[in-house]
Amino acid sequence: MDKSNTNTHKQVSDDLAKLFADDFSEASAARIGKAMEASHAYADDFISGAESMQDLSALAEDADIRRLLDEPLQKPRRVWGKLATAAVLLLAAAVTFQALWLPQPGVTEDVQRYTTRIGEQKAVKLDDGSTITLNTGTEVLVALNDDVRKVIMHRGEAFFDVAKDPNRPFRVELGPQSVSVLGTKFNIRRHPEQFVLSLVEGEVALHPSTEAVADNAASLEATEGGEISMAHPGQRRITAGWVVTYSMAEQNLLASQHDDLSSNHSWTTGFLEFHEQPLSAVVNELNRYSGKKILIGDSAIMDIQVYAGIRVDQLDQALRGLERTLPIKVISDFDSILIVGDSEQ
Image 1 (cartoon, helix red, strand yellow):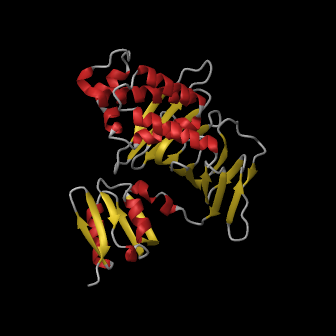
Image 2: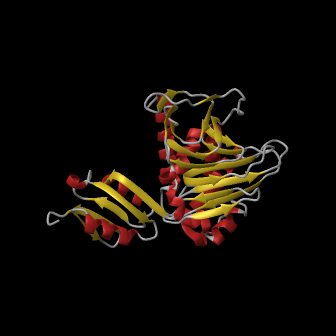
Image 3: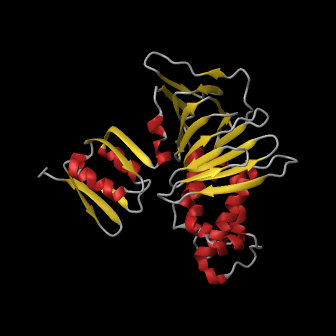
């Protein structure tokens, strides 16, 4: 990690540590807002870190907290205490950052925010006829105007079924990179340091967020083995069947072609498919949907191969099903689930 990234991470850590301090104030929020304006890296790190702190997402949905956002921040109500005050100021700073991305000169945009909690899934029908299906723990901002349809994806996973409109490109912004389309179907899963794009239908352009789509952008072309790896790919056109992983830190693209991408978006039906995947990977995926932390307490079982279909709204039953078919034992506690080896099976 270079020195600039180290300094950014340190500044974000210091600011998050001060977030709930007694002296966190409007001035602190304003300073954070300016830091967000100056650095997208800082903004992404700060918002991601804040979302991992105490249940700020729940506070953000609270009607009274949302109402406070519309009031001057000079004297936040003390009845909510330090936590609510910090949440209001944080949200104000985050809104400042979001506003920097969305509006264009001379254009008034109606920005909508859509979120899902852990374990929740939601389909959102947009005014243009497009549908965005949000997976667990996802947040997107949507702005539609006469010239462009724009989505900022902050976190999580979403499946996009985009209505064709040749006069209004549809653009998904993912930090330093954007995905632009006219009409197609694709899945995006955003991680803190990378995102994975699975293109089910049509064609998209992957390009730096600061650039418009070039007419002569090169297409991804299959190589022997069906995989491509390239640093600083610039602008690329991507067609159906490709799965692209882009590392934002390394600015590296890794792509592979597939005949069937159904498993990449089977979650939209509330169903997860695992085909000979190690138990450790299955548990990591299930933790995205579980209110309880699922842990593996026995290294000897981490690589057990799992072939299963699991409904996200029936995780307890699914774990019991795995317990019956694999040499494991599932121990459920108040706030966690432990999986250990079972020598009797």
